Length: 133
Image (cartoon, rainbow, N blue to C red; front, side, top):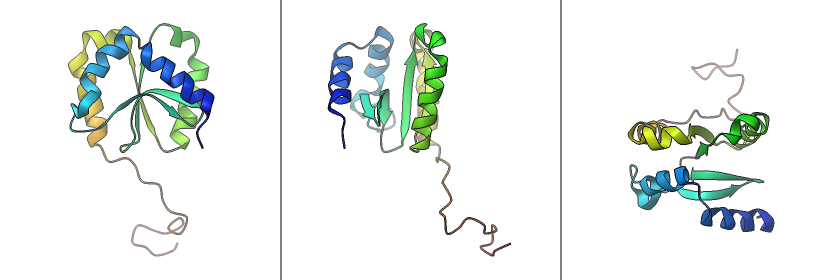
């Protein structure tokens, strides 16, 4: 179920991208990075991710100086998103501008990386060979 307030705020943020977000978006949009579809300012739970590839469950955050002061909130937010099965990668604004190719390579590597699988409850307590301890 979607939260109308979060949806509305996400729409507003899409119109007000930071310069760094706008710069990165030019490289992520239209499946330019390895054919993966990204969305910008995506509501996920009660949070809004800067960019997300929902198929790969990968979130990209672009942080400015204000995030130094918001470190505790960012950590809590990241834990909540990870609990939902997402991987989160953060980049500083400066890196997005000065090291664009390196940033894109880190994202592409993460997209091509197989996310760790979660063991099913039925398989917990079993050895690698399938037998029980």
